[in-house]
Each structure stands twice: as C-alpha cells, then as structure tokens.
Image 1 (cartoon, rainbow, N blue to C red):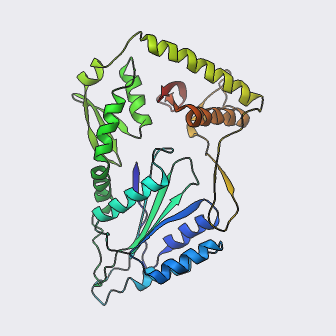
Image 2 (spheres, rainbow, N blue to C red):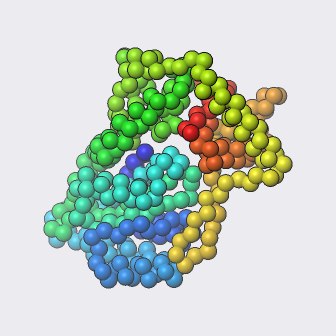
Image 3 (cartoon, one colour):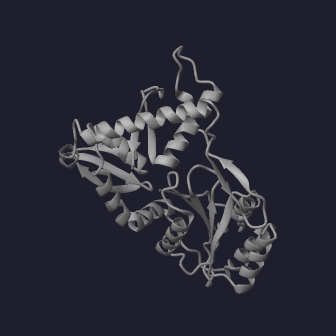
Length: 327
C-alpha cells in the first residue's frame, strides 16, 4: 500500500474534480462513493454519469460552496487530494474504498464532504479521495505533517493485515535470506536489514521487525514438495512461452467501463525492469521480446498466482530472476 498526498493547490480551487472526472470520461475510473453530500448533488452527479457526461463542474461547485471561511482562516489551500495504491490487485476497488473511508476518519475528515474514485488505468488498483479542508465553521483542518500522519494512519488501519501478511510470509518455502526478502517484496513491503533481523516498511511507515532466528528456523532445504512444484512450474512456463511466441496467448487486458461510455481496454504497463535485460550480445531486448516477457508475467500472475522478481546488480542491470509461487 502506498498512500500519497497530492501537491497542495492555492487559490481555493479543486482541480482534483476535473482530474478524476476526466478519468471517468476516459473510461478508466469510476465514482465509488460520495460522503456527506446533499441529495441534490448525488442525484445530479449520478444523472450526468448515467448519460456519460462530465460532472466535474458539479463536484467542484459543491466543494467550493462547502468551503466558506467566514474570515476564520487565511489559507486558500482548500483542496485535500490523496491517492491510495496497492500492488497489482492485492485489494479490490471496494476494499480500497472501505480503506479510504477509514483513512478519512483517522485524518479528521469523517464529517467533511468527500468523493472516492477508483482508477484502473495502471496495473495497480488505486483510489483517489477528494475533499475540502474547510470545516462548516470556516476553520481549516490542519495540514501540518499531513504526509507523515497519512502513513501512520494507514499503518494503524492495516496493522491486522500486516500481522496476517507476516504469518503468511513465514509460511512460504525458501532456502536463503535473499529468497525470503523477495517473498516479502511481492507482498508490497520494503525491507531493510536490521540489527537482529529484517525491518519491514509499508505506506512509508514502520511495519515491524522479523527476527533473524524466525527467518532461519523456517528455512527448508531439499523439500520434496518444492521439487515437485518446481517441475510443474517449469512445464507451465515452457507451455506459455511457446504459446505467446506463436501468438496463441494474447496479453492480458484490464477492460473497464464507466457509465454511459464504451468499454476501453487498458493494457498493463511494461515492467521497467524488463527494459534493463540484455540479450546474449549485451544489447537491450527488442520491443517485441519485451512485450512477450510482459505477457508471460501477466499470464503467470493472473492465471496461477506466480510473481516474477527481477534481481539487479549495482548498476541496475537485470542479472537474474526469482519465481515466487503464491499457490
């Protein structure tokens, strides 16, 4: 999970309304929730979306009308615009919407009017939250250290999930600390070596420490189960590499639709690490081969729950890869 506050905007405007509504018009976003707004606005926005029309003017007008200061604050930075993103499809748009609601409560925006938009224009599910900092009494909600508070709040919300993730991670078969680290990263965590183990980070905040003894005690060597599964995985990869090369297996498209608009396919973006792979002559791969590798990665992930983690040297060149089997 990555929670990010978008840049502050002066002038009392809400450009986030135009940004998110344009995504809906392009067919790559949907409005998941409107909280603490009037019935009239809800009706107007729903009607416009039903006919495929832009509702940004309605949304921005409502937020401006809800941002009267009555001389109680000098700030013109009214907009509160936050994004929350997960790796791949780790959380559904509905789950991210629930998370966004909890985040708004934790940040002191529970009673503010706000809008939650789910975007599906990348390979990672994410939502945008748009609100106003101005309370009904005209005072502004403090934005002091917003970014730090957002990360701390996100970690509090996700803490039960973090505990489950750690238990799940320690249940994988692995032979080395490096393999363990790759498993951790595929669960959306950053990892650093600590004095007594490895420290995990999520949402920019500390997600806990795993003791080195816990990691080493769970190392499994020469596991018959893993050997059998490795044979299966080699067969799966060979099969789909061949089908992709022959054009029998197409790339995975995430087809989404907004109300009143035509369906639009959204191809997953090319993993930037693929472009760092060199061929046998030390040259970058062709665009065709890059796309084939991306298609294979997408198929393995969506059909079999298999992640590919690239290993790079100090210069950023890909020197190998690991297969993480979540099945």
